[in-house]
Length: 112
Length: 113
Image (cartoon, rainbow over all chains, first blue to last red; front, side):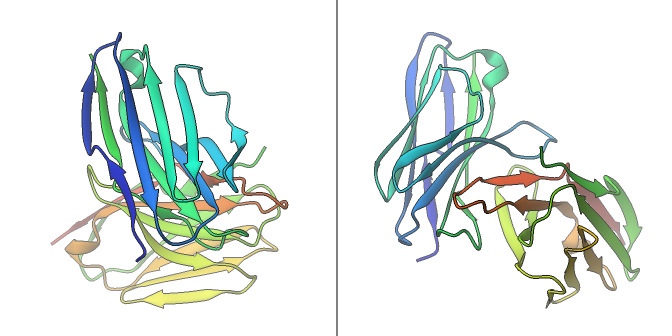
Protein backbone atom coordinates (compact mmCIF):
# COMPACT_ATOMS: atom_id res chain seq x y z
CA UNK A 1 0.00 0.00 0.00
CA UNK A 2 1.75 3.17 -1.22
CA UNK A 3 -1.17 5.51 -0.67
CA UNK A 4 -1.56 8.64 1.35
CA UNK A 5 -5.25 9.28 1.88
CA UNK A 6 -6.59 12.76 2.53
CA UNK A 7 -10.11 13.73 3.53
CA UNK A 8 -12.13 15.62 2.59
CA UNK A 9 -11.26 16.18 -1.06
CA UNK A 10 -13.09 19.50 -1.12
CA UNK A 11 -14.01 21.84 1.72
CA UNK A 12 -15.83 25.16 1.76
CA UNK A 13 -15.81 26.97 5.07
CA UNK A 14 -16.73 30.34 6.45
CA UNK A 15 -14.26 32.55 8.23
CA UNK A 16 -15.80 31.74 11.62
CA UNK A 17 -15.89 27.98 11.13
CA UNK A 18 -13.66 25.32 12.66
CA UNK A 19 -12.79 22.37 10.48
CA UNK A 20 -10.11 19.69 10.25
CA UNK A 21 -8.22 18.10 7.40
CA UNK A 22 -7.17 14.49 7.81
CA UNK A 23 -4.33 12.48 6.37
CA UNK A 24 -3.57 8.78 6.77
CA UNK A 25 -0.78 6.48 5.59
CA UNK A 26 0.00 2.84 6.31
CA UNK A 27 3.47 2.60 4.84
CA UNK A 28 5.21 2.77 8.22
CA UNK A 29 6.64 6.18 7.36
CA UNK A 30 7.83 8.13 10.38
CA UNK A 31 7.82 11.59 8.77
CA UNK A 32 4.66 13.39 7.71
CA UNK A 33 4.25 16.78 6.14
CA UNK A 34 1.70 19.47 5.33
CA UNK A 35 2.17 21.63 2.25
CA UNK A 36 0.08 24.49 0.94
CA UNK A 37 -0.21 25.14 -2.79
CA UNK A 38 -1.76 28.22 -4.31
CA UNK A 39 -2.83 28.25 -7.93
CA UNK A 40 0.06 28.24 -10.42
CA UNK A 41 2.62 28.15 -7.58
CA UNK A 42 4.81 25.38 -6.18
CA UNK A 43 3.90 23.62 -2.94
CA UNK A 44 5.19 25.37 0.18
CA UNK A 45 6.12 23.48 3.31
CA UNK A 46 4.00 24.25 6.37
CA UNK A 47 4.76 21.61 9.00
CA UNK A 48 6.94 18.54 9.46
CA UNK A 49 6.39 15.77 11.98
CA UNK A 50 9.18 13.32 12.72
CA UNK A 51 8.41 10.37 14.97
CA UNK A 52 5.10 12.02 15.83
CA UNK A 53 6.80 15.16 17.09
CA UNK A 54 6.52 18.55 15.42
CA UNK A 55 9.98 19.28 14.09
CA UNK A 56 9.37 22.13 11.68
CA UNK A 57 6.81 24.94 11.67
CA UNK A 58 7.49 27.27 8.76
CA UNK A 59 6.13 30.39 10.49
CA UNK A 60 2.58 29.33 9.80
CA UNK A 61 -0.18 31.47 11.39
CA UNK A 62 -1.75 30.02 14.52
CA UNK A 63 -5.11 29.65 12.78
CA UNK A 64 -3.53 26.47 11.38
CA UNK A 65 -2.92 23.88 14.09
CA UNK A 66 -1.33 20.54 13.22
CA UNK A 67 -1.71 17.35 15.19
CA UNK A 68 -0.15 13.91 14.87
CA UNK A 69 -2.18 11.50 17.03
CA UNK A 70 -0.10 8.48 15.97
CA UNK A 71 2.42 7.41 13.37
CA UNK A 72 -0.26 6.85 10.71
CA UNK A 73 -2.41 9.94 11.14
CA UNK A 74 -1.90 13.63 10.61
CA UNK A 75 -4.51 16.31 11.12
CA UNK A 76 -4.63 19.98 10.31
CA UNK A 77 -7.11 21.95 12.41
CA UNK A 78 -8.43 25.13 10.86
CA UNK A 79 -9.97 28.05 12.71
CA UNK A 80 -10.83 31.61 11.74
CA UNK A 81 -9.30 31.31 8.30
CA UNK A 82 -9.09 34.12 5.80
CA UNK A 83 -10.07 34.02 2.11
CA UNK A 84 -6.38 34.13 1.18
CA UNK A 85 -5.97 30.75 2.88
CA UNK A 86 -7.93 29.18 0.04
CA UNK A 87 -5.57 26.70 -1.59
CA UNK A 88 -4.79 23.04 -2.20
CA UNK A 89 -3.50 21.45 1.00
CA UNK A 90 -1.25 18.48 0.42
CA UNK A 91 -0.19 15.87 2.92
CA UNK A 92 2.91 13.78 2.33
CA UNK A 93 4.81 11.05 4.12
CA UNK A 94 8.30 9.64 3.84
CA UNK A 95 10.57 7.19 5.58
CA UNK A 96 13.44 8.45 7.71
CA UNK A 97 15.96 9.22 6.33
CA UNK A 98 13.70 10.39 3.51
CA UNK A 99 14.31 8.78 0.12
CA UNK A 100 10.98 9.61 -1.45
CA UNK A 101 7.91 11.58 -0.46
CA UNK A 102 4.46 10.24 -1.24
CA UNK A 103 1.73 12.82 -1.65
CA UNK A 104 -1.96 12.49 -0.99
CA UNK A 105 -4.58 13.71 -3.44
CA UNK A 106 -4.99 16.94 -1.54
CA UNK A 107 -7.86 18.89 -0.03
CA UNK A 108 -9.11 21.83 -2.09
CA UNK A 109 -10.06 24.42 0.53
CA UNK A 110 -12.19 27.47 -0.19
CA UNK A 111 -12.72 30.06 2.53
CA UNK A 112 -15.73 32.30 2.02
CA UNK B 1 18.39 29.32 2.68
CA UNK B 2 17.96 26.69 0.01
CA UNK B 3 16.88 28.03 -3.37
CA UNK B 4 15.74 25.90 -6.27
CA UNK B 5 15.52 27.41 -9.72
CA UNK B 6 13.92 25.81 -12.73
CA UNK B 7 14.05 26.91 -16.30
CA UNK B 8 12.26 27.40 -18.47
CA UNK B 9 9.10 28.19 -16.50
CA UNK B 10 6.96 27.83 -19.58
CA UNK B 11 7.58 25.63 -22.58
CA UNK B 12 5.44 25.12 -25.63
CA UNK B 13 6.72 22.49 -28.00
CA UNK B 14 5.57 20.31 -30.83
CA UNK B 15 5.07 16.60 -30.69
CA UNK B 16 8.10 14.63 -31.72
CA UNK B 17 10.63 17.22 -30.53
CA UNK B 18 13.22 16.85 -27.79
CA UNK B 19 13.77 19.28 -24.96
CA UNK B 20 15.42 19.62 -21.56
CA UNK B 21 14.23 21.23 -18.34
CA UNK B 22 16.94 22.43 -15.96
CA UNK B 23 16.92 22.55 -12.18
CA UNK B 24 19.62 24.36 -10.23
CA UNK B 25 19.85 24.48 -6.46
CA UNK B 26 21.91 26.53 -4.09
CA UNK B 27 23.02 24.18 -1.31
CA UNK B 28 24.89 20.90 -1.34
CA UNK B 29 22.43 18.04 -1.55
CA UNK B 30 22.33 14.61 -3.12
CA UNK B 31 18.59 14.17 -2.90
CA UNK B 32 16.56 15.50 -5.79
CA UNK B 33 13.09 14.59 -6.98
CA UNK B 34 10.99 15.26 -10.05
CA UNK B 35 7.21 15.45 -9.86
CA UNK B 36 4.47 15.88 -12.40
CA UNK B 37 1.26 17.74 -11.67
CA UNK B 38 -1.81 17.80 -13.89
CA UNK B 39 -4.29 20.69 -13.51
CA UNK B 40 -6.30 20.39 -10.31
CA UNK B 41 -4.46 17.24 -9.26
CA UNK B 42 -1.83 16.28 -6.74
CA UNK B 43 1.84 15.53 -7.34
CA UNK B 44 2.91 12.36 -9.08
CA UNK B 45 6.43 11.15 -8.34
CA UNK B 46 8.48 10.68 -11.50
CA UNK B 47 12.08 10.22 -10.43
CA UNK B 48 14.08 9.96 -7.23
CA UNK B 49 17.77 10.84 -7.63
CA UNK B 50 19.86 10.10 -4.56
CA UNK B 51 23.47 10.19 -5.68
CA UNK B 52 25.86 12.10 -7.90
CA UNK B 53 25.67 10.86 -11.46
CA UNK B 54 22.30 9.20 -10.97
CA UNK B 55 20.40 8.75 -14.20
CA UNK B 56 16.90 7.34 -14.43
CA UNK B 57 14.63 6.79 -17.40
CA UNK B 58 10.95 6.08 -17.74
CA UNK B 59 9.45 6.05 -21.19
CA UNK B 60 10.20 9.35 -22.95
CA UNK B 61 11.55 11.00 -19.80
CA UNK B 62 15.07 10.82 -18.47
CA UNK B 63 16.42 12.56 -15.38
CA UNK B 64 19.99 13.06 -14.22
CA UNK B 65 21.74 14.58 -11.24
CA UNK B 66 25.13 16.31 -11.00
CA UNK B 67 25.63 17.18 -7.34
CA UNK B 68 28.95 18.94 -7.99
CA UNK B 69 27.26 21.37 -10.39
CA UNK B 70 24.08 21.36 -8.24
CA UNK B 71 22.16 20.65 -11.40
CA UNK B 72 19.51 18.20 -12.45
CA UNK B 73 18.00 17.83 -15.89
CA UNK B 74 14.76 16.32 -17.12
CA UNK B 75 15.03 15.38 -20.77
CA UNK B 76 11.99 14.76 -22.93
CA UNK B 77 12.48 12.65 -26.03
CA UNK B 78 10.03 12.70 -28.95
CA UNK B 79 7.38 14.51 -26.93
CA UNK B 80 3.75 13.42 -27.08
CA UNK B 81 0.64 15.37 -26.09
CA UNK B 82 0.07 13.23 -22.97
CA UNK B 83 3.23 14.69 -21.42
CA UNK B 84 1.60 18.12 -21.18
CA UNK B 85 1.66 19.02 -17.46
CA UNK B 86 3.58 21.06 -14.91
CA UNK B 87 6.88 19.53 -13.85
CA UNK B 88 8.50 20.36 -10.52
CA UNK B 89 11.93 19.55 -9.24
CA UNK B 90 12.37 19.45 -5.48
CA UNK B 91 15.39 19.23 -3.23
CA UNK B 92 15.62 17.70 0.20
CA UNK B 93 18.42 18.39 2.65
CA UNK B 94 18.98 15.65 5.15
CA UNK B 95 20.65 17.15 8.19
CA UNK B 96 19.74 14.37 10.56
CA UNK B 97 16.07 15.31 10.55
CA UNK B 98 13.32 15.52 7.97
CA UNK B 99 13.38 19.01 6.51
CA UNK B 100 10.73 18.65 3.84
CA UNK B 101 11.07 19.50 0.18
CA UNK B 102 11.91 22.84 -1.38
CA UNK B 103 10.35 23.07 -4.81
CA UNK B 104 11.31 24.94 -7.93
CA UNK B 105 8.66 27.19 -9.44
CA UNK B 106 7.69 24.51 -11.93
CA UNK B 107 7.82 24.22 -15.70
CA UNK B 108 4.45 24.47 -17.43
CA UNK B 109 4.82 22.24 -20.47
CA UNK B 110 2.41 22.32 -23.38
CA UNK B 111 2.92 19.84 -26.21
CA UNK B 112 1.00 20.63 -29.34
CA UNK B 113 0.10 18.12 -32.04
